[in-house]
Length: 132
Image 1 (cartoon, rainbow, N blue to C red):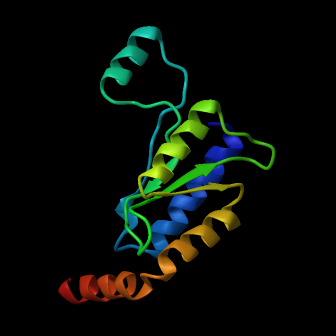
Image 2 (image 1 turned 45 degrees about the vertical axis):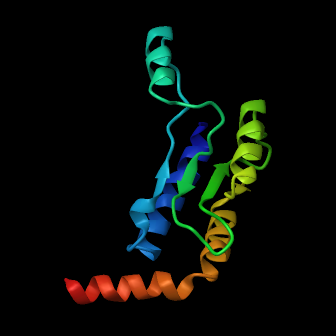
């Protein structure tokens, strides 16, 4: 992941975990990128690393989707063929897949995705606070 995309991703994750502490742990990154030697890459592939998986996954269902898969790209960034293929598979099996090109895009997509379940998200926060 390029430095600019990395900074956007860090900001997105920080914002999400502050805004939605009750489901913050359900947004996670999939660290597929980076340079690896052949042996390490082979081990990781055998362990289940899959080319093209989105940068972030929100493992929280909405009324329409099982999860939200988020690919972060700069304004000029393009998906790789593996990312395009993974997008098709993810969407085909009931997951929402979005490409966010900025922090604002991310916030908008998250709010839209969670808006149908806002009562459930907010209720969970209240319940958590009451049990502490």
